[in-house]
Length: 96
Image 1 (cartoon, rainbow, N blue to C red):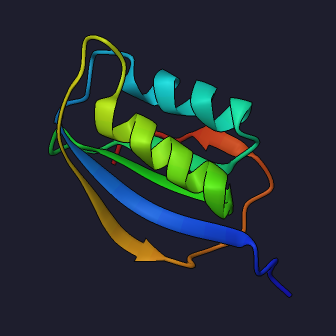
Image 2 (image 1 turned 30 degrees about the horizontal axis):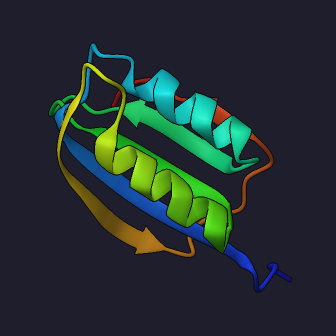
């Protein structure tokens, strides 16, 4: 049974988010917040991620995703869905 205090969010981030360390930024912050899930580049130039963990930590990483690393320019963070999947750790996945 899923933890009721846990939240899973599937997001897409648009802007200048590839070639600026955005995936590493998400991975590093997810690890520091003990989140599970994954992050990857998309061929359309966006970044996609699934973030899972305590609601407060998910809210914190969503705020971080809206600003991104220093070289990024985030135009939009879109929540594609909630409550998808169960993850054991956090990984960077191949581009799709």
